[in-house]
Amino acid sequence: MDSLEEQRAGLDRGDVSARELVQRALSRAEGVGAELNAVVGVRGEAALAEADASDARRGQGTVLSPLDGTPVLLKDNIVMQGEPTTCASRILEGFRSPYDATVVERLRDAGAIIIGRTNMDEFAMGSSTENSIFGPARNPWDPSRSCGGSSGGSASAVAAGVTGYALGSDTGGSVRQPGSFCGVVGMKPTYGRISRYGLVAFASSLDQIGPFTRTARECAWVLEALSGHDPRDSTSLPEPAWRGSPDLDGSLSGIRIGVPREYFVGEGLSAEVSERVRASLGELEAAGAYLVEVDLPHTEHVVSTYYLIATAEASSNLARYDGARYGRRAVGVEDVDEMYRRSRSEGFGPEVKRRILLGTYVLSAGYFEAYYKKAQQVRTLVRRDFDRAFERCDVIAGPTYPQVAFPIGGKVDDPIRLYLGDVYTVSANLAGLPGLSLPCGEASGLPVGLQLMAPALDEGTLLTVASGFQKETDHHLHRPGSFDEPE
Image (cartoon, rainbow, N blue to C red):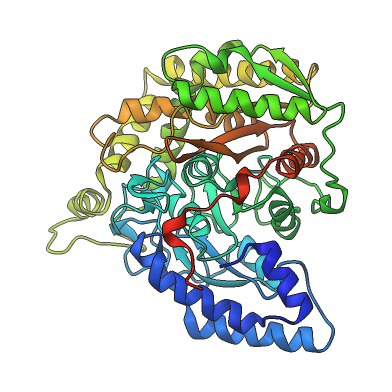
């Protein structure tokens, strides 16, 4: 499957129809998408009917947006009326949503055609897409390796060319880390920039929907379609839709790139990732940017802070799954207490149970002040670190993840080691900042991600720098060769 930009150009020239694009995407979804276990459900006839409507509009001279007529995939925690939404969890098997998420409405308003759902970690809790009732999703660069998580299915599908773009959700890096592992662009916008209405909640003060694409410019088109205030989401910012794609000239001249000292010290960062990221900083500098060392002194506390807040909010949000109203209900129970107990025990997987237990402990009497309140205070300090750093720079750059994609099963028995890998990504969620991972080369034959972060609501600068980097380099053009389409 061509990139979104190539699809758009083909539609504009009349070289291909929306129906042909959707048919090709459906074929890829049922082929390579299934082989990688990245796509877990498709909507064939309905998607083809929407493609025909797009072709009819285009024939009459009407094009709704750059996305009109292009196929897209949704992470399986974004609801769509009449379609299954499982969050890769047994507790939601058989559930069909009675309404559309706001992002679904906005994709349709833009003329995009949703062809199906992608695999994920259960309730978005994980960094490898192994915690799933569908089994692990695989990385197209090496199917024995993780595609990242929790939005790994979406990243894997875009990298393998199932569609030109897909949506995921990012609570602590769940768009950016899979983007890094799979060699595609993954973006988390400013908290509140895109409505969360219809996104199944994990941690409400951290969750944000974001796109996977091949390029920063394509990412900008998706952001334009999805952003803007939504009165149905109380956390939605009172901001108009972002409309910055025409201004992305890619110029890096005079841009100040902040390089946190804390991101390049310690034992976790592999030498090959560090080398590749430092080389990318040199490429930015050669293109006219200035490198400025900045300090983020509370970096050593961000992982523990994140996992206190995220698990506490998860415990609260997942209390609704009790077998009473929707989702899985245990059979053969004798009373309500047993129904609750068994429905949740049978419905949730080990990682979700672990986080619910942690969060319940954090919120319990006698521990709330010591843990949850203290974590919120440190969260404020993390935000102030970034405020001070952005007085000296326009964007902050560093690694997205300390290593390249690890083998499937390699960390499943050591959750703490997996949590520690989130050290570079969780800060953007804690501080509500926009962040983006883009390919910056390979190490040991696997993609490495360069993470960029910008001040809140400054997606324009973030995407300008990313676009400029891609204009000067060809890392984003590299593809996992084993899943090329046949000639």
